Image 1 (cartoon, rainbow, N blue to C red):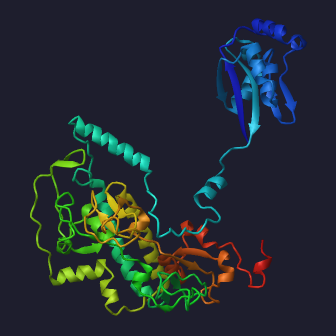
Image 2 (image 1 turned 180 degrees about the vertical axis):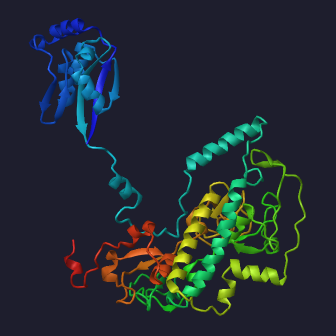
Image 3 (image 1 turned 30 degrees about the vertical axis):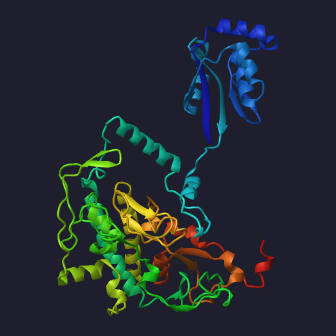
Length: 486
């Protein structure tokens, strides 16, 4: 138990304390100094006139009145229990006018190691919410902060003061993030290769009418299909064999030679290649790929408000490379080769391959999270479009909610890690070879990202970060017992 002691310092002499105490509390004036008062709530160290104040402080009640009457609370400091015991035994200190120990109490520590561990990994968490399609996504940064920053930039622009930009906002690289970008890209290649091998062992099914995915020998029986004509099928899914794109949802972005150069227009959108957003983020963070060149600046970009006043001129963008090396690189950084029927042999050791793939997935997410703290990534607030750069493109390709009002333009806002690498949550079962999930026992099942579920069913150990959502401690009852569960 943690013990806290309170010491009142800079008091007058003991005679003055006794006299002032006798005037306000006559029934305690003749009381001798007591070493320790025992109570049901703890122990109170008292001395001379401060015993009344200490007792009232500990037991509660009348504390404000005691402060007004005694005027002893000038400076309060906290000392360890060991010092309290030494001070309580020292008569010289109690008689000195510099300080008096008037109370200490015992209390349980607020944060124990078990509590901190529970805060990091709680027992169970709610399943991820399904965002409505007829509503804009919530802003990652509160809108009032965005508006406040815009007002400050506008005020500086009216005053003729340039905006202060730090790398990489000014077009320069961040040297300490270049190794992170290389490691993220290598882990991305390992992730694609590992998933392609594991899918030859672990079966994956996807619904033909909706984005639902299930990792198991057969599709689940939960009737929650939201695809077309789902009413005729009573919301039953139409299961077909899944691919790697059902597990690792492809999120592509335009590759830009100069992110601060010309913006992509709707008429010029075919002049730019589409590559995975993770790869484009790594390229802009410092990764050098001959197939996808990028402009590296040595002089920072200058901006006045929202206007770029000095970008170092427009550089001519080199033509894309179409060699065999480019196609080989594309097969490594994209799922194109896996989807085109390239034969993938099963792994020699399935468990090691699953652990390596799961580690690569964690490395990719942590690396992308670090890069997104510095490099700007935009996402549409209505659809799944992602753009890596200081501002979004002008291609009119949004077909989501009320796109007619926006003439097909995207509603750009700051992106989150789940928009760059969608987790694609699927139902999790402790026994994959058991009966498939049913709608009657839906509330007893947990969920996990599709990549994690594939690796776990292939033999990898479940990471601690995903255990709460998987609900591993919940025993799934029988169908007849479900109605008896509170």
